[in-house]
Image 1 (cartoon, rainbow, N blue to C red):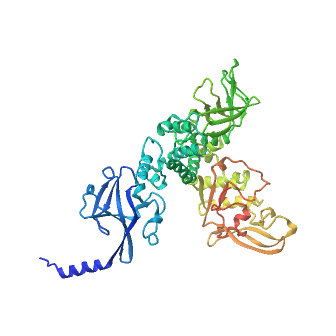
Image 2 (image 1 turned 120 degrees about the horizontal axis):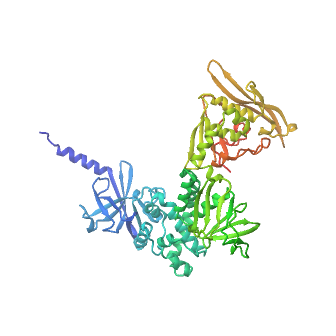
Image 3 (image 1 turned 90 degrees about the horizontal axis):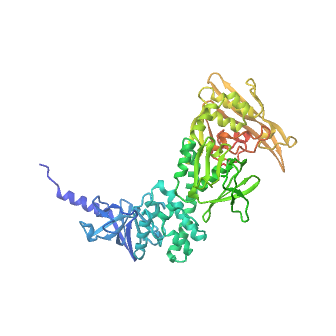
Length: 586
């Protein structure tokens, strides 16, 4: 039987105790801690640096008073804990319980002890499990937390906290929740209330009708502050989420039928249908079909009036549609009909979408007997460039590379080469197409080279070098002020099978002063990859003008001869008049 050396065990225990230092700082004002999520059960510690845990069920105990913060230093590392007397509801082994500070969101971190020693985590809900604030405020934060998580939200909270909000709203619901909350804030702060609010919205926020009736006069000071802080903290993130949702819409649905069905299912957030309708209408033309019982005529003030007519239905000529989403009047839809301008007001939730062979038709109201019907006479570039079926059709129709190079501007040719010979697809995070052309595979190097040579006015396979036209030189295009010559070249080493394309030459550029410029760089070779990034709309873009080259391609970027200095005029992209993929689109 093994003998236990009690003396050695005691020495080890004392050594460990000596390695641990503790410092406790009590709160000057009483504080309390609560769960950050409504209805949560979370384990807390019986002792610092130990594994023994105890379950805290928030349904049995909403919040706990906090004595102060404890700093425990072990092996030169500081650990910070909230220290509390153990309440009877938790049945602790000892008198105290502890919560790690790094799992706790502090409403006012500057009031916390050890604020200079403790580094606050990022202000989000990713790691937070608890919330600490002054005891006098804890009930308001509990109410706000439970309000965020509630299905039907009665009245308005008195405090706003974005971290608590994020913790109680699933990532997939952020757009709808943020949108509806900002709709509330906009109504109150801009004094713009919906005349016909969405029934779904009113069911979720039953106090909205009373809020509109009183114009917010009955709100408490805290509720008013809640809406102000909400708008200030959420607006920028919501706009990013909304833009991503709009950009993603065509890609998320495989057909126009699926898009129309998805459009009609949108009930939240407020204004999403209107913004999506406006985006579609902006890139397409529609014919306006008005039922014979109601023909639009222009009226003072811009609102549409309808006159009874007995004429048969007849489609109007193609018209551009203007859509203006508003809180008060819903959607204001303006168009030209038979030479007269008409405006129709339609509640956003009464806008109905139908699948059409050229996209989506829109009925401006649920009543078919009186609602104007907008039918696309051309495909919306916005929908078409994001539709998977259309993209697949586009890729299949891309011809072989000689035709691509001959018929397209350089940027559009590069786009087609990337989609036909490269690998890639849509990046759902930034809404851009991203492709890579592996120049070591097949004839990819020579295909890209053909596009570059064509850019410089050379279409012969047998020409291995030539002058870069003045209009492409970054040093100016006035020949009597630029002396010298910059050339492009290609070369191939038989032994190593290395193929290269580069730019070389000397020039003296004179403006206020004369500057000698020497260029000698390889743009790409057959061991590398060319990365191409482009906007979805660029897929169906037409040639601008073969003789009118912009300073940089606006919708297509690529990586040729990467440089660390964006202003380095020796980079190949500057001679190609093509922005690099790390540069922002206009």
